[in-house]
Image (cartoon, rainbow, N blue to C red; front, side, top):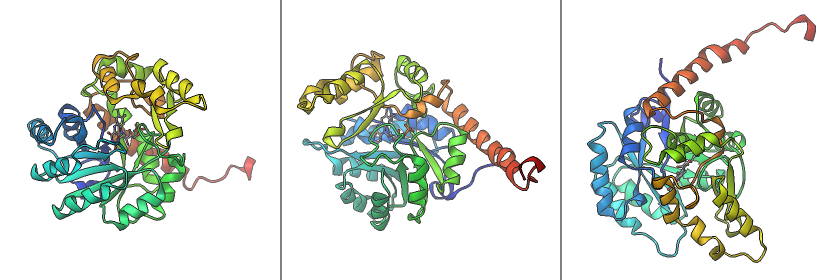
Length: 334
Ligand SMILES: Cc1cc2nc3c(=O)[nH]c(=O)nc-3n(C[C@H](O)[C@H](O)[C@H](O)COP(=O)(O)O)c2cc1C
């Protein structure tokens, strides 16, 4: 048995599971392992220092898998913008067939480049209105990130249980549910809520192949569902990161009414986060992780994880859910 959805059809993958773009994690080791497991792996463009380096990373990933993989390109609201068009051109030149985009509305300019190259666009967003707008502008798939997610959950705070069906009511193109998904139960729930598959970040960080330090994987296992902090809200750029002494300190400093970004800049800097992931020094900065940490208890290979999720999902659909249909109501409760 296999789960066939509009996502498996459209992306030419075996299982309706996508690995979301992850800064400093979305390297060839990660993306190829996910794709070899029959899901869709994703390189992260801005993890590479230049468009040329991205071209090399795409080739490196191709040497590690003959399955489809995509590239994430996230447009951040920063003053010193990276060469987004250069990265997009590198993706096009390398013959990539699927991109995941995310970030500010400036991303629409890149969609035109990708559409002209007949590349499938998965756009990740955190609200129904942005999903509807992206569909209208011609993206191929909506990836909708509930409030549980790692990274940027937006400012509306709508969890997946409401956000996914609310989006499914309005979006006609295939949809991925994202945020807080880590096992077969989440996959079945996503399908039940109207999605065609799932997107996962944190769960893929706790796998053998994730190119991050084992201490970070162990921190993810140790954290439960309460193990995150929301930071930077006062700058309308809310981020969900793992709870740690450093992210607690960020929360503490920003609680002061007169606090500014400069008060926390060294703690939340991307460079500091890279040190955490590379060295396992959890005191060096913050790292992204979601509420799904509460459902993560092991570090499997990507292929073990994907196979287990799909088997769980199939068992839930075939055995558990079917049990609830057509049961006569016991006399005691009639
Ligand atoms: C370590 C890490 C780095 C991330 N970096 C990015 C990024 O650069 N761009 C992006 O669009 N999303 C990024 N995300 C978000 C994921 O792609 C995905 O949307 C999110 O993790 C889904 O929630 P989950 O962690 O509960 O599965 C990141 C997530 C993690 C865990």
